[in-house]
Length: 351
Image (cartoon, rainbow, N blue to C red):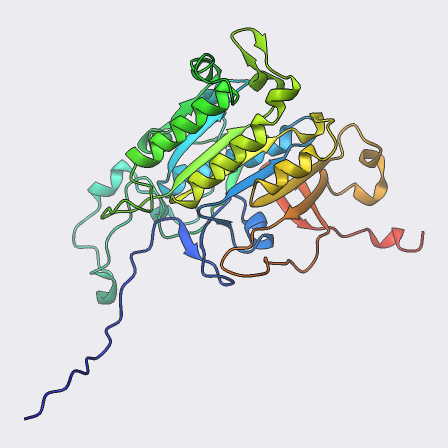
């Protein structure tokens, strides 16, 4: 009997990383920003291996809220988290993370789950499926949060977040002269977490996980002070774009995603903000109405500010994702924060 070299192609099962999904546009791996309405307008979520820059509003309230959503999503999906701030204790930000809104009690297992009866009747086709991880919702992409409540500390301790505060950044103040010492120290810590946590693309692990990096108010005056000395002279102003470029290189070879908030309204150098934007992949600008003339404008009474998409990444394609419109606004209610299309009131159409 003649033999043949033909072999039937078997379907390969891909082990999906918890809290991720492939993009419909370029097949890039995505993670949720923590705000489902934001994920929808930027193409499904934040791409793994990229840096997202959020240009802070004047008072920094809403950009900080985005940072909290991004960090809270790490606790819900079991992702590793590095949270750093140069002007306040990151543990305080961690305590203020919003509590998730759980529609299905099965999303988060509690200690009482072991007391359920073993002979619970379920459909036979579901009996072979593994149970959810303890404390995390790995199958759901993106969650909703209640701003009136804070997250259970048990969820946060289970992911063992790495906190880098002002005192930690001060340790590197005498180590580097060509780059802002605090930036250099932060880069070293991030690289260490990537290597030790098995997040590098060159490392082979049985269970892959995502590293989320949240940097609060980078480039603020507190980042330019080292040991009581002010480093904000012309030579070190360009440490920030160098840091962003080095960080972007680290992200490209890691299963990690970084969200940074920068108070760009503080910079007066022409073209400097544009240079910072070029060093990042996704750039979002939050324009708050607080303290401006638009706050009393009847056309914007339903919103708290405008949301601008400055730049979206071009990954595995020549063009970036383009939303239907670029006119977006955000509103903050008592329990939630949303971003939606800007709609002017009908009574103002004639005027």
